[in-house]
Each structure stands twice: as structure tokens, then as C-alpha cells.
Image (cartoon, rainbow, N blue to C red; front, side, top):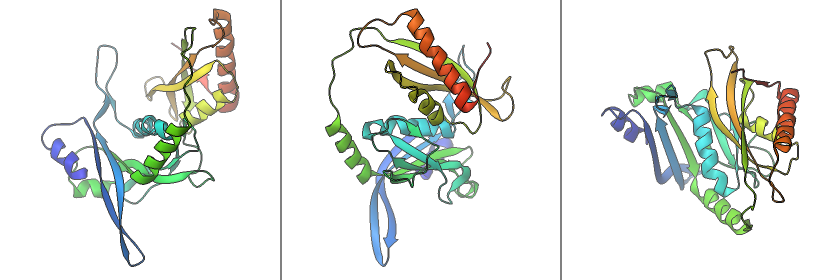
Length: 260
């Protein structure tokens, strides 16, 4: 993967998203072990410059977001800080499968009961980048395929079809200012803890640092989808839920709504 990324970078391709299915080689005692793995590689911009947006460099939250989207079909994902020596300290995570949880639990330990460790993800360490003569930051993830395949089959077998809702959904965006240690997983968990049945989906849309955002904090744009299976939601109902969400995030996480 690193050779492929270096080859592309040396030929002017700066924004990369690659994947490879292959084998990792190791030992178990005196025996050689071949492990089927899925490897992801990324470099460059997560978002290119446009009329409306400034460019944004790919980072660890982007990699975790991609993994979350990928592993949603396997029942969800958990991630805990840490990783092997070939990843940059502080910019790497150990990835585990959750027990049917469809959100990223970055604040839990992957060693908890019910979690199945499947791999690692993060930025390539400087000494490794220098060895491969990588000219910009490179991010990778390596996941074991066999537990992924099992989790996918189990999750697919457990899924049940439901009729499409008759009533329209409503989206509300919340631009939050949070301490750097507060993850999207904690935001989603605080919102889910309200037990509002009309909350269908919680998404992290964008992350921003710098500018008017104080040092040690970041701005997170969270989108919540509301939908009732019994009636069209009124403006008053949507406002009531929005108020409960903001109050919970202020109380539990010290969040503030971003001005402007």
C-alpha cells in the first residue's frame, strides 16, 4: 500500500483513496501465519476548495468516519487510542467491532467485553514515511477480513425490513463548539440518551479548527434527522426536541452553539 501511495505521489497524484485485499504475514510460536486483511490508504485533501468551502486536509477524524461508514454493515465499530510502532503516536487508534452498535465509540476501550479487535488505523509514523520517501502525510487502516466477514453475515441475518415511513423527515443542523477531547461518539451518545423516538439518525457533517474557534476547541457540525411513524412533525415538536438536544449537550459535554 505504501509503495502504491508513494508511486502516485511521485507522479503528481496528491489526493488518494486506495484499498487492497491481501495477506499479512506473521508467526504464532514456531508456525507461520497468513492473515487475510483489508488495507485502506489515503492522502491529500478531504475536501477540495470550492466557491463555498476552503480546502481541508485529510485527518484522523476523516479516516475514522470512513471506517464507521464501512463497518456500519457489520453492526458498528469501536475505536480506542493507540496503535503499533509504524503509526504516529497520538494519531492512531485500535479498531474493534461493536455488538450491533451503529456508531463510533471512540471513548470506549476496544478491550471491553463484547468488542472484537480487528485492526488499526492512523497516520504513518515519520520514520516509516521517511523510509518510503513519502512527501506528505499518509493515513492507513489495516483490518482483518475473517471477523469482518462473519460480522457482516451475522448483522445481515439479524436485519428486518420495515415499511417506508408515510410522513416526511426533518433535518436540523447544530454547529457546536467543543473541547478537543470531546468526540463525535460522545455527542451521539448524549443525544441518544435522551430517548427521543423521533431521532432517526445522527451524523457528523464537518469539523473545523482555527479562525474564530479558540485554541483547545473545535467546531463540529452535527445533523439530526427527525421522523415520526405516526404523523407529520410540527414546528413546535421539532423545536422542542432541538431544545432538549442543545440543553443535554451543554449539560453533559460543556458544548456551546457556534455564533454565526
